Image (tube, rainbow, N blue to C red):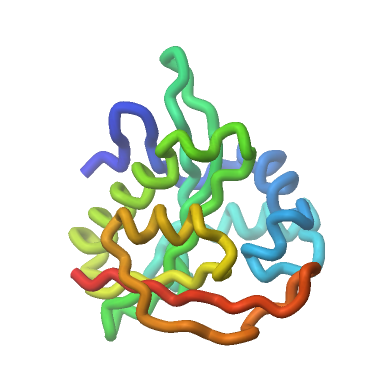
Length: 174
C-alpha cells in the first residue's frame, strides 16, 4: 500500500526534516494543540527522529504530510498515531497542518483517509480516537467528515491562554 493520493503523500520522518520539526515543535501557537509547554532542543529532536520507526516498539508513529505542487512535494504537516495498544487494537490520532495558508485545502482530510486505511488494514487497529478543543470547529468537522463520531465531552479540560476550555473526544470504529 502506498500512503499517497494524487495530491499528498505520507512518509516517514527523515533526518533532513530536523529544521522543520524544530520550527513547528518550538512554536507556542502549536503547544495548545500538542499539550507541550516547553521548547525542544535540536538534540532531543534528532534522537527522536533516529528512534522513530517501529510503532510496535515505540507505541507511536509520526508521518510527514507532503503536498504535491507543480510536481514538487512540499511538507505541510504531520499526522501522528500515539497511545498505540496492539492488544486492544486502538490508537490516538493527531494531525497538524502547520501554516494557515495550507489549511482548508483538503490536505488534512486526505491525510486522515490514508492514515485510517493504513491503521485499519495494516496495523489491525479497530478503534481510532482523537481529542479536540471544543472551539476548534474546523478540526471537529474534518474528523466528522472522515467518519469519526463524538463520544465524549471533557468539561473545562484544558487550560488555555483564553481560560478553561472543554475538549471533545471523537472515535472511529472499524
